[in-house]
Length: 188
Image 1: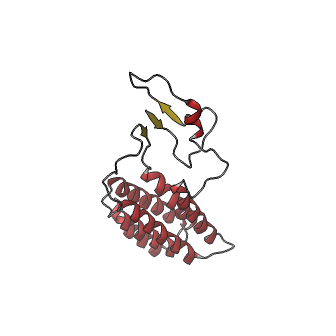
Image 2 (image 1 turned 90 degrees about the vertical axis):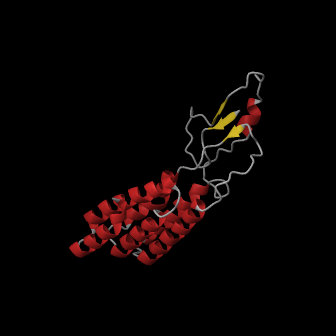
Image 3 (image 1 turned 135 degrees about the horizontal axis):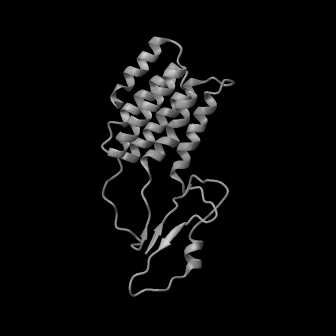
């Protein structure tokens, strides 16, 4: 049995295992070269095999839109909407797991908190001083907290609390801070 330890997009440093091999009692040999060749290690992440990479790139687009030189909160709000649609589609996927083609290979599931970190941390940081962005982000996280996936509920609430903390330190008007606090009320 092969247990994959590093999902596509993982940062791999020398000495970090890519996979673990466990032998059944009647099997003691394995073509290690073939296992090693099954992994592609490159300098750049690729959309084709790294689902989290798309979330990161969208978040970077929002970050650039929120930079002082661009100051385009509308584009950041659009990205938040796209992130919500992508994560909602992921959460709504069929729960039945199809019969595996390779029943001796174990691959870990994507970590929901990692996906939320990729999608929303930079937007919350860079948009903390923009009431428009903070309102949309809190509404988006509230919508995602309604998912049936328990990890998604936890991740949405955690990110709502973090975004609220950032907004409270950056928004100048007490009324704006109060509005964001009210919208984040679901995350208590």
